[in-house]
Length: 153
Image (tube, rainbow, N blue to C red; front, top):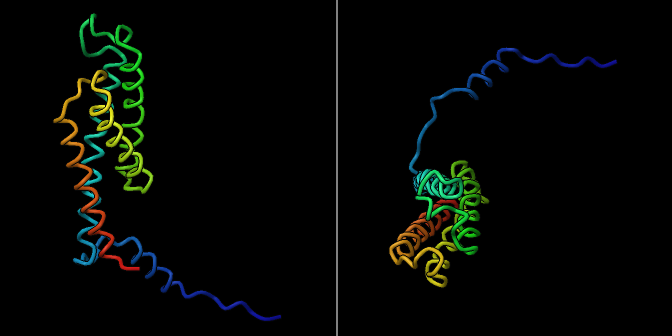
């Protein structure tokens, strides 16, 4: 029978210490990727605030009795519930900087802009919202493009 070579315990210890070391060398090679992740985290915070606002509308924490959820038109109710749910889902994905989080967030941004432009009776057709959503979309696309340039195929 052949013998199984024994492992060197000092080597195992060295690898585990290196793996858990908090001292990492920061390079400027991925500066745009770090900026993109920071942007996604900021958008996650904004997204959770928007989602909580929509949930507050649904549950009646904000607004008067005349403005209660059940007194609103069906289109407003549907849109509010949609944004209450999708903003919270987007927040999780954005905070984790996952690809699906960015897709869900982009869906919320485009949905809000379309509702404001095409269906102004639902939320009032506020052009400021459309401009802000467009700026956020443009910032994301610029950062994603710069981050992708850092990692050529």
